[in-house]
Image (tube, rainbow, N blue to C red; front, side, top):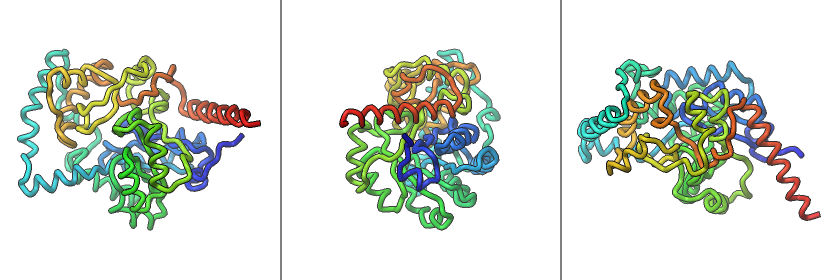
Length: 355
């Protein structure tokens, strides 16, 4: 049987499987591989500066002539915090960062990490670009998304409403990832084309509500007929094309379903991540992480040092509870095809029960 739903017709794809826009992992190579296999590849561009984002979009177009998308973050809390700081209502960034920078150095000393220099932390970002994960950073990303006229845009956090008119004028389809019913209602009123309900068991930034409880309530609140596609992330982390390091791919294969935890130690927002010495250290020391984007400034040197030392026990990466089913590192197309085949077989078995 052929798996085809309204989401396929809407997005011009063969099977209703969308690659989750996993920051750093969903690269042009992975997005193109998923699109070429019949699904819809989505770039995980949360950490891409404007220049790198434009390069990624153009690189994806070189690798596939199929539809693809871009996922970034639009957390309203970051914009509110910026406005409060500018009004002098909250402490400055320097006041927030200084105490915990020493804490991060203490961690690196204890676990034998050499702090990276400023050049290695700069990566591909121009020094003149906005601070990563700041309000200005998110706004600059959206300008690139609009200028490049991408086929699909998905907000991994937040409401794309302020940009909706310009996105729609370009013919861009728009989706939003939500973790609560009230957020589904908000983004629906903005005119999004589809909603992704991501529950507590999903990897990365997610919801306090379990997936099985969240989806039917979002479906009801959004006046939709039911789930018509899947937003898949963790299964593709252990793919040849994923843009994470080899030791992180192996951490996915080695992990069990209880090997993840919810932590704010990386971005400042609750996110499901493979449990590590870094996540445990914050709990052990009783420290309160900073909000986004400041927590990222604390975590970045530690994670960069861990990557250089290939320390999977310190930076294994984000992942959902479904990683217990991942047994090997494979091509993305093989992962997608097996996923579709398994779903088709399950639907056939279910239909046989009613004959």
